Length: 152
View (cartoon, rainbow, N blue to C red):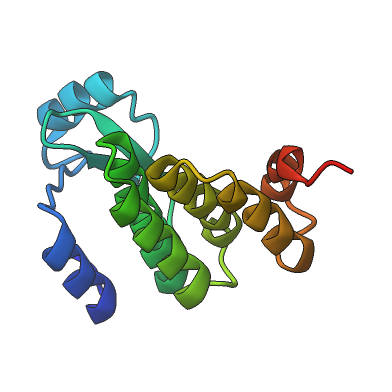
């Protein structure tokens, strides 16, 4: 289903892939499209065991960006089930392995939030603010983290 073998292997290892073709399975596509408000193809949904959407990827992406987005989805799914350590692990992996993607600043933000949620230690948020001072400082995620700046 995916031409890039790294993407295909990652999906096989971490997801139960379901593909619905817009023309070949028009009725299924219409039904699922209505259920999940899928307005465009491709739309990749990361859905939890209860059928709740946890993350959405719309449109085509290069392999590295797509892998980063898939990992972001796994992080958000772990966060939603309050597995903050797993969420932090996924978010930090994105920052490490996919640092040049659009997903990385968001992952850096959520890694700090996940660490805070896991530990209750507000230093995790202040540390995340500091990380944004050297990396991704001109992003909206840095602006969101600015409320965690130490007060003098």
